[in-house]
Length: 211
Image 1: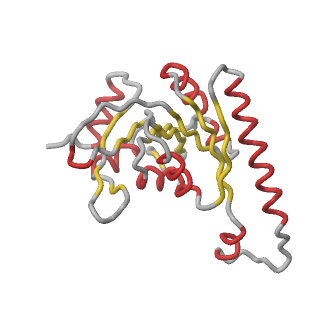
Image 2: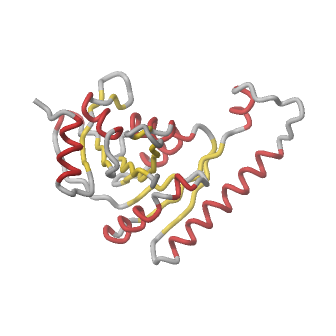
Image 3: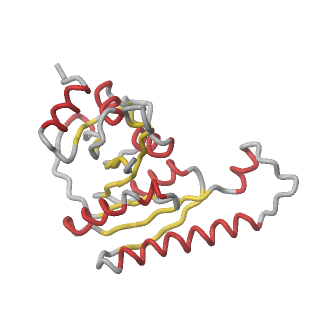
């Protein structure tokens, strides 16, 4: 019988481990990840980083060689809190780093019920330009740490585009941050991190930001 989530958290934190690594399972025909009951609950109960991997089809295990790290950033302190972890991983594993920023499209604004009465379409050009500047700035900072880093700005639904970008090349690891709420005593996954974790075929390292 699989260990209960609370027992896994207690064991990992009690032994002073720095990472929890678990597998989740997919269900045929759904085309996305479906959490197993244990894997679903562990991230909500520990402050430790968590690596979630989807097993190969058929349940077979194969060696995985990471070559690339996708680092989604949205300009917030929350998303940037994962940068030191990404830097350490990239350095120790000789990984290429791709900073990814996703911005909405004008169509998304219209379809979401946004009041477009006085809407200037050029605002999306402004958003895109700022996103490019931001992503490249973060890439430059990582290059100054002697890391092979590029930047990419995409338009559309953030979780979908992050997953597509990660799936574009084998040997990719997504590194993202999530947050906790004071007094809750557990993780609360941000909507983007939650959806990426559920739907990605690429391994995901989820790191809790400082309180």
